[in-house]
Image (tube, rainbow, N blue to C red; front, side, top):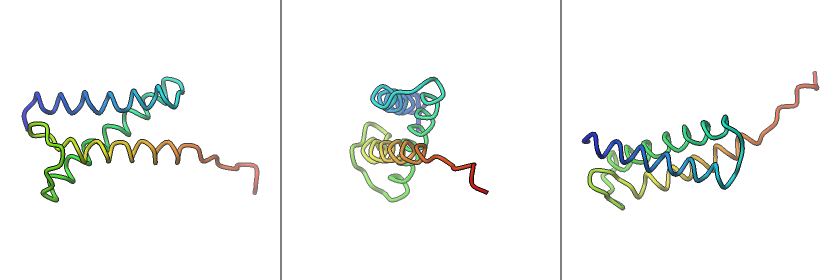
Length: 91
């Protein structure tokens, strides 16, 4: 993978995280949380597509199709899991 394709993937995944933050809202901590989730999902999807040999939505050397899908799935699941509250009053 070339540096420009890595930079493009980083830019696209950052855009996914920022757009999710605009939609769901939250403070600076939530923005960082969404960015990290988007990066993990995007690069996980890219690597998974390469490992499986899938060529869906290719953009140069980037497996953009599965990377986008997995990035969105990780964002939604991470958001959903972050809504869980722990009851600390029960002993």
